[in-house]
Length: 345
Ligand code: GLU
Image (cartoon, rainbow, N blue to C red; front, side, top):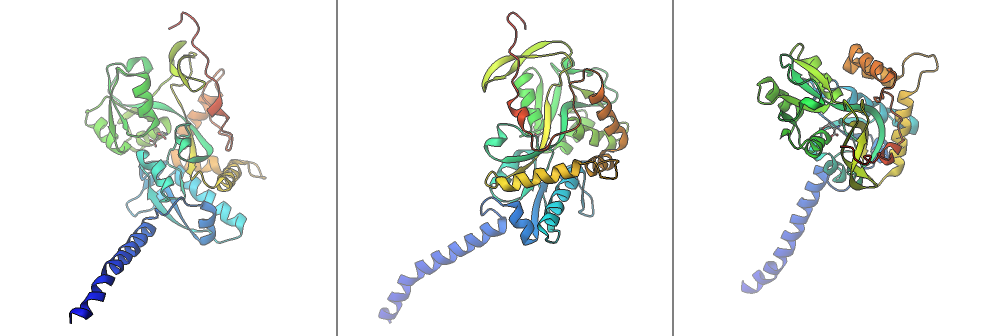
């Protein structure tokens, strides 16, 4: 008896180890965290996982039935279907994944999504971790304020106010860096910020104007939008040649430019180039004239009056606001800031 039991006792740890490894491998695959995904391979295989927001009306919103609507969702869908047509394969099945602001780089790096179009600004810091196609939209940091609050009308009214924004977002970082005397509460979603604003727990929500427009359209007559721009020439904290420096902001310059990209793994530059091609096709004027698919989808998502106001502001003489993005052109990342002139504050 004793002789028989000995060999089986020696085998058991190895078997258990193998079983554990098999379960771990299966779990990693199921979670999609087996390495970055290549969009082109997944389109060819017939199934893509696209990241977006689920709580931002007009941009990425999950309806009660589970359907995802909004401009970011339209752009992502156009891109994968356009590329599938180009590759002469059927349109892939789309699984949507909610990608909160603070988790986007991680989701891309871990291969939990093929792409993220989620009001995702292209920044040099994020480009250390991920690649971006785009920009496919340009917006600016602004404020959402309760309609009956007459104390907050411009950038210079911010000191001493209580704001909310979202952790991991550029607007939250901008406030911390540029406006240390503003109290900032960081939530994990903009919808919880809107709740806090409605209940009077904060004075304003700050993020991209296009996101704020979506909430303001949704809660008719509750809120007003405030543009954030420099009222006079000033010197502010910035960077020159990658080093911290005081930089000049001319009167009328937006507080921040937010250019939306489609975030993707850094490993597949060909996929990024193809997505840029798809974005340019979406923005092209149809041969018969009229609006591009891009502008039609934008108007459907945000409403004509919001889009008309964006175009009018960009077209005004001397405006420092732009409307039309240029997919594939990331030269704005290198555009030099002007040093603060001697003796100016
Ligand atoms: N566009 C900004 C960002 O990428 C704010 C919007 C967001 O948090 O999704 O951080």
